[in-house]
Length: 530
Image 1 (cartoon, rainbow, N blue to C red):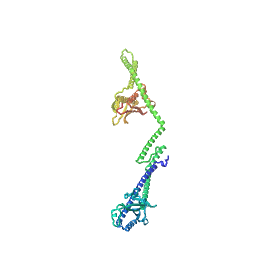
Image 2: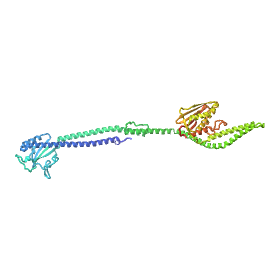
Image 3: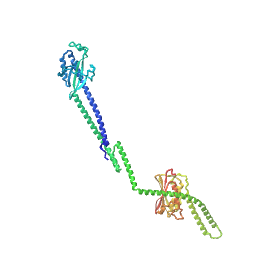
Image 4: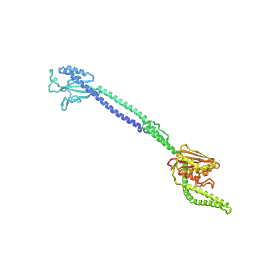
């Protein structure tokens, strides 16, 4: 949007600056001319006084001797000096007894004339008049101004005691000396200086205005144009535009803040655009994450409910199963010890089968009790490598029997976790036994422990036959087993899952194939794990 010329800030600043300069220099010019005129006028006034005093003093002696020709000659000589317009002498009757203009001699002037009014006022004749009242200004012509000064000639003792002539003693004044000085040169000087001062003021005003205009153009107008351009570009949607203004003044600060704002807007816009373009993908990702979280919650709730049921069932079944197992073994002993000559071989086989199946049921009950056990045992700070080593020691005979080699990789620094070491040990033993059972022909198990992002990460890798894809999502469910019915209860991995969850950790199948399976356990290292 274009701004009108007089609405621009730079134009307003230039106009205000120019008006202030005009006002200041106008006042300065007026004061300068006023004092110039006043000083020159005072100088001419002083000059008039000096000429008047010179005339009075130089003619005093001749007047006492009544040598009028000498007096007149002296006055004519002074009257011929440059700048002296005329000299008159009035007697007490107002008659011009001498003048440099001979045509005025013996003329009587009006007492109300400008030369007489100072002394002949309303209150009568007075010789006591101020210096300002003795002066007058009048125009001899349209182009020439004249300064007139009247100087009273008083009746002094030398005058009324003189032998040549006598004046009455009671007279105060004998006459008046009127000196007229031309102000033409003074007016010309004032006029010339007035023009010079005005011209200089105008030149200085114009120069400062131009300099101010250039200053405003460079330091105000151009930066404002850049700011306006930036706002216009951002308004058009060009959020990547940056104002190229590097100054350290207020406009530079505004430009940097504007650039920072546009940068943040650009980032936010790109994020919003990215969200809008990939919304479906992100929704699917979040849905999958929520589904996984929901499955975990369902699994935990299922395990909790099943744990309560398992505890009750295990408690109720444990005693009858123990009785069946005990009595079956007792009957076997009695039949073997019987001497009645009958063949009890078949019965003993049946009783052995009953004992074995009772023992298997007892193992199931034991797993149920382990699964349902959710007591908050005491947590302590334990060395993870020691827990792993103890677990390996307890299953070492399984490794030897099944021809399995176990390799450990521990970090250099000691890793301590806040846990129930016996339960962690039980979980590790369960995973290691599963790994051994998945390698009937022997193989290698690798335990790799690392410290990653404040987490203890344990990887247990075997060389077994792997886990089928269809079973991966169910392996942590209670009573779900990939083993033969007679070999597994389906509670081992559920117990592992429960123990690791109790420690705020996570267990998962990181990798599985026909070449083997890797289980990954993550446990927090912080000391407030509980």
